[in-house]
Length: 134
Image (tube, rainbow, N blue to C red; front, side, top):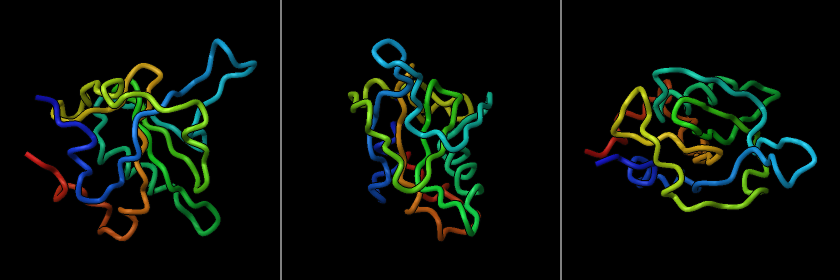
């Protein structure tokens, strides 16, 4: 059974939901709901994405959101990002297994699982392993 983001993040309420991303048909321009930075890796995990986004924080940049999409993509958004601008999707749309840990899920096709990073800012090197549920 795949461990969903909801179960992974149950203790913190950091999981905000699964949302549409990349308006392509009905929009005049392409829209990414988290557009500050992104990375793609063949060993993506929830922890890797959150760490990537939190490492972008500086005295002038406040990253608040991490989003996992299409299994191997991670997107980051600043505080105040309009992550729900294209609407919410059922959590079942964000259930692709993470390639770095197949017990976790990492979004779906144009479906981004959004995490509020403020719950992890004070942790030591953002170590989330204690939050794993078996």
